[in-house]
Length: 303
Image (cartoon, rainbow, N blue to C red):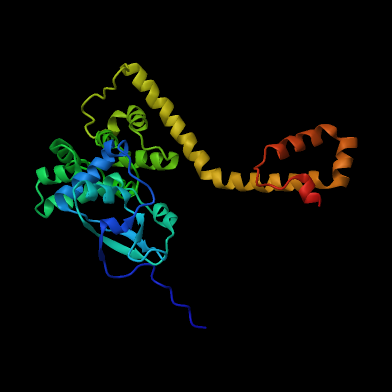
């Protein structure tokens, strides 16, 4: 049987549409225009123009009018600049939720590669800083952000929202320790600076990038650092042991809870336990009461 063709969701050609013909779903308030993110969008348009076209759909009831699905900040910035038209992608439906759901925020490492690529193509640091509405120091710091970071760590964290300061902390560790710390961050889904500094404090002197230099942590004495190293080492071992058996333990727990739910839901079994082992029945009922809301109740199972 032939597979049905998948219809393209957009018109392939980009349209240039008068801004007055584009009807927004919401207005961009003055408070929104004070946000740093909005200012970056506006500054980017001022420096390099509109990069990402607006997404619109035709209004069937109003000829020549279009409904704005995505790009309200860009439209507002264009209006503030006195622009009369905008480049648009025409969608074949008006499902606005689709676009908001598919938004992918730029990860820290992806932003680094974007900046490095732009600089390599001849864009000056000054122009890039203006386009991103940041100072030149920010560009210089981002340009050197991954210096001294293991390639394995870069690959592991490439799509994560990681603070640039976290990479500064990682840089103080050796390559193997960086990989260990990145694995712990991924397991805990914690990429904060505080967590990175805690792991640095727990790093042995020999695992530092410069082991000959004594490690210093603000507010901690050498004795406290040594004790923290021992405690964190034990904690990491316990964490890895729990992580290795977590999936299997959860599976066993789900199966056991499901069995107990069905057991208590059986009227004959429930009556027998109530008459002969009331303490066991009480424990079973306690287990049933704390199971997921999605689990069937004993009455539902019995029916």
